[in-house]
Amino acid sequence: MLGAPTRMPGRTFAIGDIHGDLDQLKTLLDRVGQVDKHDKLVFLGDYVDRGPKSRQTIDFIRYELPKTGAEIVCLRGNHEDAWLRVIDEGWDGFVLPPGNGCLACLRSFTGGTIPDLNDQPRTELEWEQLLTGSFFPPDVVAWMRSLPLWHEDDDAIYVHAGLPKVGGEFVHPSKVDNPAIMLWTRTMEFFKEYRGKTAIVGHTVTSLLPPDLSCFSPENPENLWAGEQVIAIDTGCGKGGFLTAIELPELFVWESRDPMRHRKKKKAPVIFAG
Image 1 (cartoon, rainbow, N blue to C red):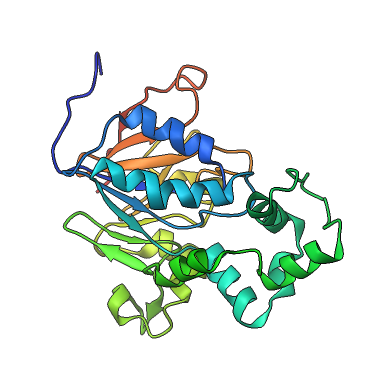
Image 2 (spheres, rainbow, N blue to C red; image 1 turned 30 degrees about the vertical axis):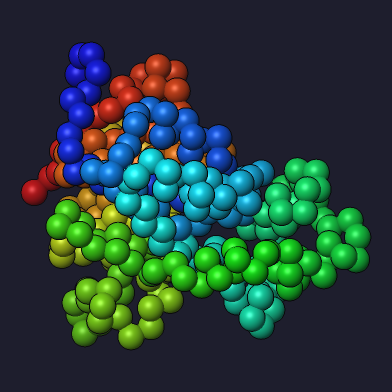
């Protein structure tokens, strides 16, 4: 595609898991260009942990993006869900594994130094804050509790992780008995067998999905994954990857990584198989 992309009214941008990497979010939005009251941004959750700027990411989404006039839809991810469990009842099994990046989240709020992956809390206060989530301001906790678990419009169903199969069929989010499963599920049958309204999800890093079933650059499993009716857009932001968005209804792909370095255009169409 030559020249600047034609700007279409009524665009929706579904944006994958950010995980505290605000710089990549800003890069992605710079490439998308100006959004306004005709546009919508749907965030699929997991704003925190791993990356160095969890607090700043939340503040940017809550306070800066609404100034554009665009509709902002923020879904709950499993990391927000996990922190609420930590706050309500404790969950050492979530906050202690270094790979979850919880110490990085804590220090983004307290002002401590950015930790390396295997760093441990340095003081008794840090240990207490990490194990209880007490470092989160009350308004941020209230915001996390308010986040919806799914969103739907004419183009797609948006959910953090996926949809469960009940009685041999995948159910609509409104009919899921245990809504938390939509934040945590990671079953391959959803990606392989779901044939309902197009579902856009994050949560499962695309490199873990079967590349032969993707109609979008199957030769590179790190890219967005597009199956029959599922589009997965967690491309590892905050843990060594990059941030991806898909623009609807045109089904254009936007990325935060250097497009020239990876021999990709800033904007490339998804062509669905079937």
